[in-house]
Image (cartoon, rainbow, N blue to C red; front, top):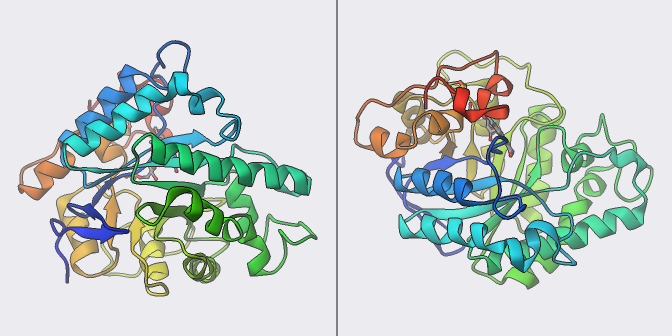
Amino acid sequence: MPKLSDPVIIRGKKIKNRIVMPPMVCFSFKGDHGGMYGEQHVDHYTRRARGGAGLIIVQSTPVLGAVEQLGVWSSGQGEPLEAIARNCHGYGSVAMVQLSCGNVDINELAVEQIHRMQADCIAAAASAKQAGFDGVEYHFAHGFTLCKFLDPEFNKRADSYGGALQNRVRVITEIIPQIRGAVGEGFIISVRMGGNIPDVAGAAEVAKALEKAGIDLLHISFGMNMPANAVPAGFNGSAIAYNGSEVKKQVHIPVIGVGEITTAEQAKFLIENGCLDLVAVGRGMLADEKWANEVLADEPVNQCRHCGDNSRGCLWFDDHTQCPAS
Ligand SMILES: Cc1cc2nc3c(=O)[nH]c(=O)nc-3n(C[C@H](O)[C@H](O)[C@H](O)COP(=O)(O)O)c2cc1C
Ligand code: SF4
């Protein structure tokens, strides 16, 4: 079985260890020159790369405007993203960016609007590649727009984007060839999705369909809601991580798991028992930028205090300067 320090190669990109920084919006950071991103973001991600994360997935970034190269996708705003990718590479981390489609009711969308969104998804991947990133992660989790397509309990569309499994995944599966055409062979196309849409069996079916369509990597979090299923005795992890491990059994592509992974012991359990291929450490890495290097060196980490009942209680959602750990 692999070790936490073992590399994994995806689409020719060598991820030097199994530790991932998952996407986390830095709500209280300021962009430069009125843009979305700036020096604060560059510094934040550079520190986590220096801290040893094998893979860094930059926060949820809207695809909106990508076709016209507006907003974050305009050449005027590209520099911070380019600097993040460059600096991550400088410290040996693979760098991806999470792409999202906002939070609209998909049952109300006209087909033209879906096609428009898909065009932005393709264009954003091409721009991310141009900025120097190694891959993109489409945000199909946490109840946002793309997540709603996947969930049979939410998706009530009566057309080719709702109903049967192949329809619910169509929003992404039908554009994979175009995304691949735009980014080339050596670029990671990933999906972050729930391991409970609406349950783990449903998630596994979606995961298999995505794999078949040509996705390179899966990141299993939660879907429309936090999972309510139990974790069997002996599994050293959260329900979200457990569902990730169950989905992993059904696919052949690498799976990232996440959710309350805070200690070296947990991370090692999940990797060394083959439950997951990579582990994402969110708040742990907000609280301690050197989390990865310290865990790999068997040194103590600066523990996240787990403010609130779950990750939504994290003070980084409001004002990172209030975080008691960093
Ligand atoms: C401040 C903050 C911002 C987040 N932003 C995103 C995001 O942009 N996209 C996403 O998919 N998840 C986001 N998440 C969820 C994290 O990626 C992660 O799944 C969650 O924090 C659970 O992992 P943890 O227990 O290691 O913190 C965010 C979490 C936090 C705390
Ligand atoms: S604000 Fe609280 S939950 Fe968030 S990283 Fe800091 S200590 Fe952890």
